[in-house]
Length: 113
Image (cartoon, rainbow, N blue to C red):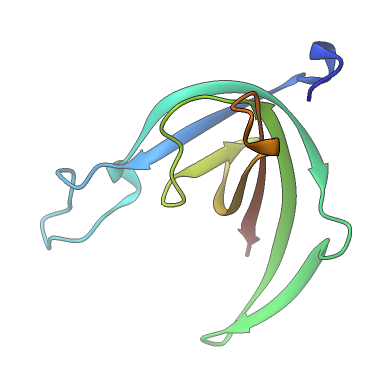
């Protein structure tokens, strides 16, 4: 449980993909993402993963893992993403702490090219 609400000092946007907003070729674009909620949270670095380097399609990318702790709210999905400091992070794990519907711990992964 969040002992000190003052530790929720970061603001993060939760975005969801709107399937009706597709480009003229029928694919999802950056404009397809809509902000559904703005939350206050604390952000920690995932120490066991930290920053990893990945090679994909001839491009070197740094993967950045973080743990976001926030108050519980309805309707959070694995297909959503979080915007932290104007960078998108994909949700990897959603943990409803002790199944008490009071606090989330969300593990996210971002790509820095």
